[in-house]
Image (cartoon, rainbow, N blue to C red; front, side, top):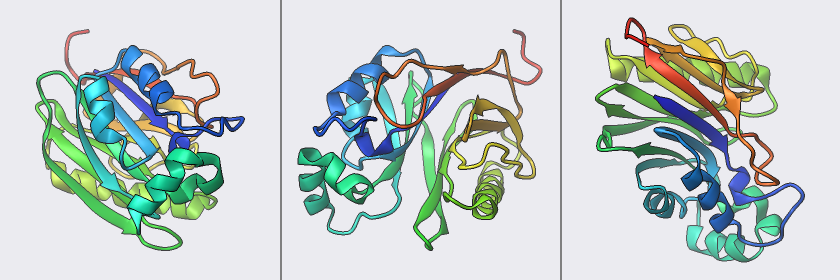
Length: 224
């Protein structure tokens, strides 16, 4: 299973492009090979269209700054580098293939200093979860990772688990999960999975302030 994780930086670029970049992000995501895409800091109006453009199924969960969302969207699509993260946000899971997932769940990890959530979907291969942990605090990032892992493992029972995303720590160590690889704070953890090779960072031009990563996973005990 090819798992991609990318923090979309609220649809912005570095340096600022001063325009809506949906088409640029969608073109990249549609052109890359992946089975699962875990997206963070995604504008809340993007997941449905991304799923159509990437021939995928989508599940998302709102994060922070989403009050009066129509107004935020109006500003963000015209002046994204003015409103920045105040345009609203969500985390999204995109699934390619016939298995679009079922039993999508989310849990709020914290509300202060801002809302953070973990969400997950059950597939025939196991549970796949997405996280954006609290920034600027190693203690809070580790706490979010631990609570997210505990929550998803509770949902999953004995089933295999993948938990990926932006952990805002380079060394997340939640009990019950193994770090399978990643780049800086963007990691993929799992139970019942092993990486077939080191992760790859994908060429993304000026889009986002994070590099997208992709990692090839296989079930433990399966034939390569």
